[in-house]
Amino acid sequence: MQQIDHLREEGDALYAFLDTLADDQWQRETPFKSRTVNWVVQHLHDADRWAVHSVTDPDGFRAWMKERAAAGPEAPEPLAGRALLARWRSYFDQLCDALAAAPEDLRAPWFGPDMGLRMMATARQMETWAHGQDIYDLLGVRRENTDRIQNICHIGVRTYGWTFVNRKLKPPATVPYVRLDAPSGAVWEWNDPSEADYVAGSAVEFAHVVTQGRNIADVSLDVRGEAATSWMAIAQCFAGPPETPPAPGHRSG
Image (cartoon, rainbow, N blue to C red):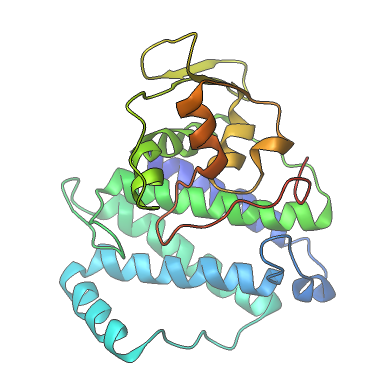
């Protein structure tokens, strides 16, 4: 399954980058809500660990979710720096292996609706890529993106209506046309072509906006029409309560 391969590649790339960090850089605050590098990697580690549980023991995961809801979130493991990196990588590899070994029709429970394997792999790739960007931005390192970012753009397009519903807003009747330029130079398109309501431009910039790594004002996407403009101002392709994109000028590049 290509999405699982892309997830593994995303984790390999992030691990190679994190492996270059000096010990004192793990305590530095990223542009993501001033969370430290340790916090960001711990966040990825926790979610990957939970995902392994979900894929390998769906019923056990559902029971654990009920217990967790009653008891409150568990405290994170007291790990940091290279020890945390090694632990995250261990669970990440377990997750990729578990996804590859699971029945293709598996519906994995999660904190929202259950997910098929493709969606689970894509969601974990999206989180790995987006939070990895927090660290690239902190250190001012330019990231080399590949066409596997198409999965993140796809989940960004798929969550158009949910972005509004999650905020208790009625989705616009119009569904914008999306036309993006891939890192390879390929062109990706979603929805019916329109000259009145659309989003066009860099696939990487689109991924930054839908993961809320960039404010729409800080990218060069061509956004036309009321529906597209409303969407790009609040786009959110990840689960959870409504979040606010970074303020204009806070994150760029």
